[in-house]
Structure formats: structure tokens, C-alpha cells
Length: 393
Picture 1 (cartoon, one colour):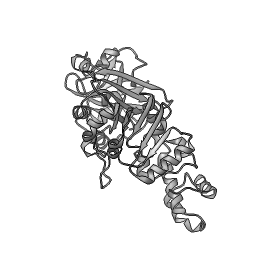
Picture 2 (tube, rainbow, N blue to C red; picture 1 turned 90 degrees about the vertical axis):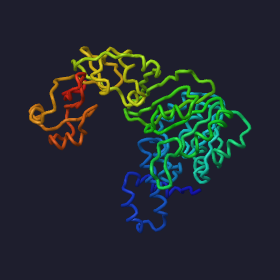
Picture 3 (tube, rainbow, N blue to C red; picture 1 turned 180 degrees about the vertical axis):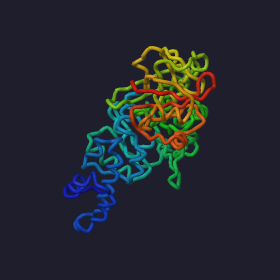
Picture 4 (tube, rainbow, N blue to C red; picture 1 turned 30 degrees about the vertical axis):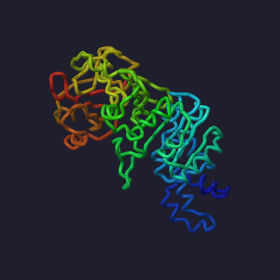
């Protein structure tokens, strides 16, 4: 594993915000420095800026190849997971760069970081030492080999399987990921009280729950209204109706949560109405989790249409978990009428249960992105396509 001296660290700090390609063109200016290696460090740190800002700024840490940084959990999601299931021993079977293991080490007496790539395992071990995480043990082996030789019993086994194929294509199905989660399930549940699996937000939740079985709880985690991961808690003798929790980690790191079960969702008949004074769009985690009807039981809102997933009320509900708008008008989709209401020809457009895409609408109308106006193209309870003119509350 390659470490860096003070001159090399100084180069990284000085050029952290420059274009890597431009730095490579200037390599001759630094004959005494391994510029290509330093640029790789800079490039990896730049990719980590948004998700691991504290690590990205720490020039003592060593960063691996970019793909390991891309696949790493963010500080926000890693900290959230670490608080879910504290205990004595956690085994991270897909340790990777080590962000999850590091945050788990704050909630567990001991963490075992298992990583099949030996160089990546060495990098993680080196960084853990610098970060003061003395309770993490690193082991360079495969998940399957570790489980076969593991004679202890963990409180939790955690897995974040690789979701890229041989051609670097993104994979979403459980059977396409490495390690083979479905094949390892029996031994996983023998070696730990609980198994926590992180899966792609692109994976269908119903399909995953059916394939996995023994699902005790599901968390859908969004950061600033963008779905980042879905967590499945597996254990022997799970409840008949696993709870689902939609989590949105906000900019100020506060957390909005919404809990329900599929049984509740299936038995609810939501109220419907035409658009009223306020329009509500649930956050991305709630929509991904599928709480389309349950939301009307916990908040006094009406649905616009069974498939539109937009909601309305006459009085303002300021604590609604999502975006809240004041509705200033409703019309059919007519270019002339639209442009008459938008003299600047500018608006933020959202499509919910509507035949045209955002790109189609912009092409047909010439409306540009931006401004303070928000247009929702949707379908109402009478099966009619409509446009909602809104301002953000």
C-alpha cells in the first residue's frame, strides 16, 4: 500500500479543487513528484467531497480507486445505520473503503471488516488507525470464506454487495450482486442474530422482500429528498407484517421518519378531492416505500388520483413530510393558456401520472427550467389531465 510524504500531501491540498486532467498536463512542472498517483488521490477526494467531506479533507488518509469511493456509503447514511442496531460484535462482510465499518465502530464494542481485495483491506486498516478506530479488525478474504471459518456469533452481520458487473455496468437484482446474498442466507442467519442488508434503491422492494424472506423491517433512506439506499433487516421468526420506515436525512442532518406496514396500506381507502388551496408531494423515501394511502391517515390530506401520489388540503399542514405548495390555479394542458400564465416562460416542472414527460412538455411549450413557479402535470380524480400552478410554501 502506498503512503504519501509531506511534500506529496501538500501537493494534494494545494490542488484539491483543480481539474485532474489539467494537472496531468502540467506533470512536467513537478519532476520530483509522482503526479499521476497524486492526481488519483485528488480525483478520489473530489468524488468523496459530497458524501465523505471530513475524509476528503483529511490528507493523511489514503484513498483507493475511484469505484470504491463511488460505492461507499455517505457519512450521513453510515451514521444513520450505525445508530439502528448497537451491540457487541458486528461483522461487515463487504467492508470496502470502510465508511460503514468506521461508523459502526462507534456503536459496537468490536467490528470485523472483511474485504476480499487485499490492497483495499490494507488501505482501510491504515485509515482506521489514523481515525482512532482501534476496535476494528480487518481481514482480507471473501465473505463466503470468512463465514465458513467463523466459529463465533455476531450480533449483526452487515452486507453492502457490489452492484457492478464485469463491464462496470450497474446491477440492481440481488442475484446479480457479489457476494451471492441469496445463496449465503442460511449461513448468515446461523452466524448472527440479525442480518442488515443494504440494497440499491432501484431494486423493487416487494421482489426483494419475497426473495429474501425472514424480513423483520425495511428502511428506505433518502438524503435531501434523494433515495440513496434501502435496508432490509433479516432475522429468524420475523413479524408477519414487517414495518417499513421512510427516512429523509435533511440538509441540517435532522431526520424525518414515516412508519407503516403493507397491511395498513392495503386496508386503507383514502379520501379524494379536486385540487384545494395546498398541494403536497411526499418525500422520495415515502414514495419509494409505497405509503401512498397510509399518508392520508396520518395527515389530513386528500389524494388527487389513485396513481398520481399528489395530495391536497384546504388548510396548511406545515409538518407534512415532503414539499408543500400553495395552489394558485388549475387548467388543462394548453400551450397558449400556459404561456399566458408564465410571462417569463420559466417554471419548475414535475410530472405525476401524466402522458407526457418533462422533456416533452418543455419541447412543446418552450418553458425553461427555473424561477419561482412550480407546475405539476398530473391526472385528477375525474381521470382528466390537468396542470397545477403552484408556489412553494
